[in-house]
Structures are given as C-alpha cells and as structure tokens.
Length: 259
Ligand SMILES: NC(=O)c1ccc[n+]([C@@H]2O[C@H](COP(=O)([O-])OP(=O)(O)OC[C@H]3O[C@@H](n4cnc5c(N)ncnc54)[C@H](OP(=O)(O)O)[C@@H]3O)[C@@H](O)[C@H]2O)c1
Image: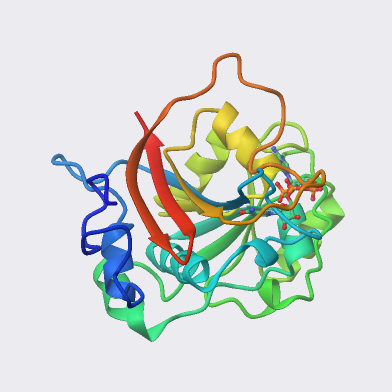
C-alpha cells in the first residue's frame, strides 16, 4: 500500500517478486518539496521496532532488522545532508562514517550535497573514542553537538581529532531546537535522526521531529528493551499522519509525518 505522497514505488504492498530498486526507494523517501520551495529544515527519524515494541536486542538494532530495512536505511542516509545520532548509539553500535555510494553520486551532486552525509553526534560527556574512523577518516568532518559547559579537554580532543564541535545548549546538555538550527547553519537542512531512543524522545518532546520512518519487524522479543523513544511522557500524545506503507518479507516500512 502506498498511502499517497510516497511516490515512485510501484503499486501494491511490495514490489511484487523483486526488491525495490534504489531509485524507487529514493523517490519514495524524497525529502519534501513544497510549492513555495523546500522547508527550511526537515528532520526525519528512522527507527526499527519489534511487534512488541523493542528497539534493540542484546544492545543492537541489527538482530531486529532485515536486508530490506538496511536498503531503506542506506537510502535514507543517501538522501540526507546529516545523520543525527545519540552518543550511546555511537558507542554501542560502533558507528562508522557514512560512505559515498556510486548509485547516489549523481543525485547528491545535483542536489548540491557532499559525497556522503555528515554524522552529527549529540553528547554531553564527549566520552567518545576519537581514534575511530568516524573521526579519523570521514568523507565529511564529523560534527559533535554539545553544551557550553562541556569539559574543555574533551572539546579539545574532539577538535584535535578533526570533529567540528558545535555548542547547542547552555549547560552540558544539547537543546534539540538549537541543534537543528546549528546544523542548518552548516547548510545541513535535510536531517536524518537514527536514534537512539533517548535522543528521539527529546526530539519529539521538543517538537522538532517532522517525520518518522518506522520499520515494524515481524518479531517478538519479550524482555525489557527500550522502545523507540524514551523519556518523560508527553502531556498529550502527538498525532502523525501516514504518508506511505511498504511491505517486504513481513517487514512493514511506514512513513509518518507531522500533521
Ligand atoms: N531500533 C532502532 O531503530 C535504534 C536506533 C538507534 C539506536 N538503537 C539502540 O538504542 C540503544 C542506545 O540508545 P539510547 O537511547 O540508550 O541512547 P542514545 O539516544 O543513542 O544516546 C544517549 C546519549 O546521547 C547523549 N545525549 C542525548 N541527549 C542529549 C542532550 N540533550 N544533550 C547532550 N547529550 C545528549 C548523551 O551522551 P553522553 O553520555 O556522551 O553525554 C546520552 O548518554 C542501543 O542499544 C542501540 O542499539 C536502536
């Protein structure tokens, strides 16, 4: 099913007996263009959850993902200017820099984008391993978003490792709206948040999330894993509208945006 607005992916709930091409996925997940031009910024999140709400298994999302999920993950990265991610996900998932992909090179150049998305890590402690490829060999310098009161020696270590450190909060913490503005200041307007749940919860609570791409994985995991968003409950649940729904091998790929 394509609920409209997704565009590009041929009819039905899947691509028949073949997988969607990257071109089809890129069209289906294109960042919005309004009649009066592109929105100033657009922040989408991409998350995966089991049927019973687990956002990870054994501390990672890979066991609840699939090949199709990873193709969509890669497509969303290829469309984005910057990938926003919480420091714990970087630590637990061993994050690497986004890579350039030949299939998307022409489209990125035409859109005025760098070869690959930058990675922007949100961290108060700056307890990050600056010897990792994320810092030593990214195609685009990795960004670290932190607060004004971050430890100066950690800021210096981040900068020495080649990261661009942006202050987006008054204490040690980052204010989500200021983070979006700081990234826009670097020319990054097509934003993709890849979690984790604690970061996503703050993006939702701050009202800066425009879109959620949610993969529903046909698995049950029981246990006490985090849900896709964490933190204090909102006073009133936020309503989103369905943009598109795709299916492959029992995995549902939904795309919701703010009403
Ligand atoms: N299902 C999915 O789609 C998905 C996606 C991503 C991750 N995950 C899973 O989620 C788990 C990790 O997620 P998580 O929720 O525990 O952590 P997270 O959101 O990835 O990172 C939390 C960390 O980010 C930093 N942070 C968050 N908000 C901040 C703010 N406002 N100001 C400054 N720093 C801030 C802090 O880093 P410091 O401690 O450095 O200060 C905090 O400890 C992993 O198991 C991962 O596999 C699942």
